[in-house]
Length: 251
Image (cartoon, rainbow, N blue to C red; front, side, top):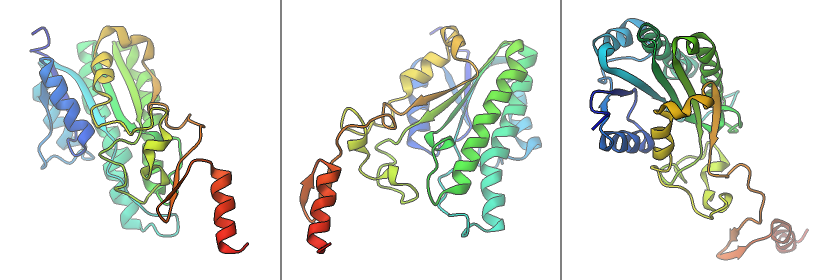
């Protein structure tokens, strides 16, 4: 296959979305490589040493968002701040620096940040996660400014909530009942971004370089009726739902 000599680094295979992308791109002939657990992405010398041997066939890097973290402003500790900064903005910065240095020398390369809609949408009780996602969004814009003239394409994907996320965190209301927030009335599976990622690995994606791409399948832009369940009963109109709740509570 024409992609057989192209290495795509996926820096973190923790999420189902990253695993799905790895499998999909492997099926297209790309060689998928990920750092071993011993490599701390926020340590410049470690990620640089990992990247160096890949130089000849390095084609693209996909860097996912940091692990989800719950904690409001008053609850976050200094230790939380340090850990999330390391795994979030600092790791993204060091990955960018290490691999885009190689891309600049090669005069080509693709940097994709597989991030989150929480880069611009507050989570509520998730300050460190949102801050780090937002910082990586800005990093992607700066990377486009610094490296595009050397033939590097940079993309920031603001992915929505998928079935692998749904209901697994109370850090944001978006993680509950997301099926009714999507126009199709269903939460996408973890593989819904695979085709888009494959497209971003082609020359045809160049017009999108430097742009944050909201890829939530219409979730945040959907304003139709919503379904609510209360004590086994189902309601589709929020005002009617509120009226019934007030009536039941005697207000």
